[in-house]
Image (cartoon, rainbow, N blue to C red):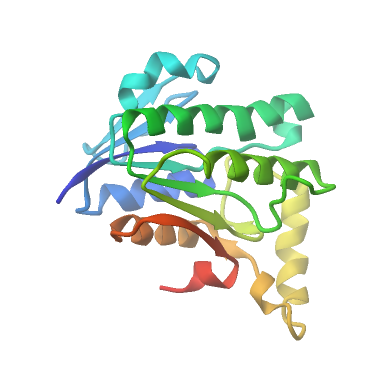
Length: 215
């Protein structure tokens, strides 16, 4: 049965790969992407909608879909402040999840992070953990949370810390017991999301590190 899906963060690393992969997947007849700036359309199945995330409720009608893929995210440097990063990483995504739950979306998939914890000393991991905690309380039939380690792939902007990590982490992960922390390509995370979306399951699942590499 063909379905309709919506993607948040379609202009990002994972979201871009996800849009391309879903466009070629027969499971979905229509893909809606909600972005802050225009996105290059890769297929006539993909329909891009420019939205104001500060007033996302105005786009509530767009959430009449079967599946929501949430790949939105930023850094403190990109956002300009910790408060601005929080709006993107937590408030925007949670508002979208609420609208999706209210619209009857069945399957919610979220890209989070390895180490996500609402009590973490790291502001980034604390935000990811807080969002996970909030969305798992929403009445979706199925929730899939993916917690990748460092993401590899070409971005539209540079992240100096991640660039250094792409050099050092693969070497560190060759040490005994650390292989499961190895980096993962953004396209691989997108592929895992596509495979999860084809499955008929219920409940909450959290996929960590090595689980993301499994077929």
